[in-house]
Image 1: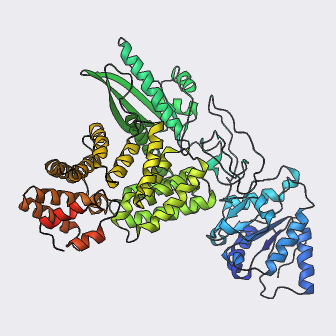
Image 2 (image 1 turned 90 degrees about the vertical axis):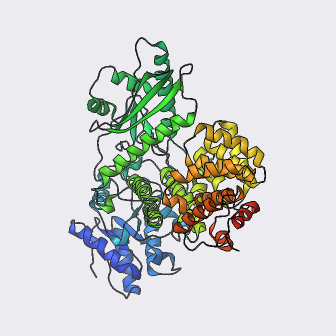
Image 3 (image 1 turned 45 degrees about the horizontal axis):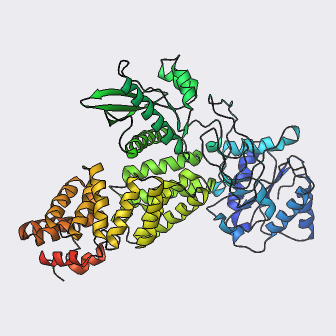
Length: 626
């Protein structure tokens, strides 16, 4: 036992089962010259011991309660007396004095934490297995000197270590500075705009030492400036198009509040007016990425070309283009602008992840983890969906342990687990759907009107065969945006499953007219045609769709069912050779699906024609046995 009486000492309180992790924390602090009271004895308790404990807690400068699944599982334990003594002393201290520094050492679920209420008023730090970092050591050293300067403080949340030093705060021109907020009660939700990354912070105080920097002015990741678009000087209409499309792109970028912040147009225009160097312009505006555009004549229309640029290297990350009719000032569909913004944002996320690849794993913060999960999942999901999903979930669980209400991490968690692609590899997709649904519902509690999450919810209802509820959400989305292609697709699918194929046909036509080269649009149209007994059109469109799909999409239990549509349509058209060839291709990908019962087991119930008896009649006509 190591006795200390210094009023600059740190007291470690832990359950016996966590002695190894506590020892690591102790060793790291002592190596930095910090005094630590740390008992390694199994024999805790007794009058003499109680007196020593009370004396040490009375005289120490900080108490570090170590919280874990072990402390969660014990209703009684000597550590609980230590916690009570520490809390009793804290009641005598000024409110801005930090005395309790709770540490979480494993993947304990915060949902039902068995800790004193007082712990919920201060910042928690996650040190997996007791592994500390220089940032944590520096924070403890700073707190030991807190009587000479303001102390750290933060609301209760799981955080990683704070930044090792506070960088100079540089405001983005034209954006307001962040205001500090008083502590929030656990469970309250407050939506505030933050300059640093423009994200929402919920149930967390705003203090610069309150953990990693995903919510600080120092964080310039995913920051954009949309520069004025260039137009032909002697073409007044091209000037109008340049302004309108730039305004629309800026607006869509600004709507992505959960992972993007955008410099106001006036600031970007002012800076661009006197600076030609893109690198210097990005530094002046304090952003990582620039967006440029140009408008030029293209036959009897106009072509808008948009570049996403890395401000540091001046490298073009993505080039996207869209047509604008000569009598319009904007693309016909808002989805075209959404598509461009999606490509620009995705290229920026990939760039930020690439920059962070050299970071040690234990230094990845909320944004690093969530962005890496998104990038790695997209790169691997078509070739090894199971591994892609598992790895991404690990990263996202870490991110949400640090910041449980981070919108981008929640959205990514919902996206990867509610993706139809899960059906291609998972023997029990409901496991993934449950994970995604939980993240989706939490996001919607934060932002109940978020279109992307409402679309996910409508899609989840469809996966669970709740077609009326799905269509109700789709109708609400279409009331807000009649041109929403995702909402149109959701409604069309619901109508088809509800036996209203004619009504679905009208929406499918809109879908195909907007995206004539989309395999998904062609696939849906083929299934509607089959339901309406338009077998020739069904076979033709199914064939086109299949030719565009990759192997993972063809094996998917939802999208891969299009090959069954083609088999059945060819059989009904009296083309047995074509039907047999199509079935042979199907069995090449899915060798264990050979009979009608096999197909019933394989096909996902939410596939377009999964519950349509005439599909299976057509398959029997093709010679597939019962």
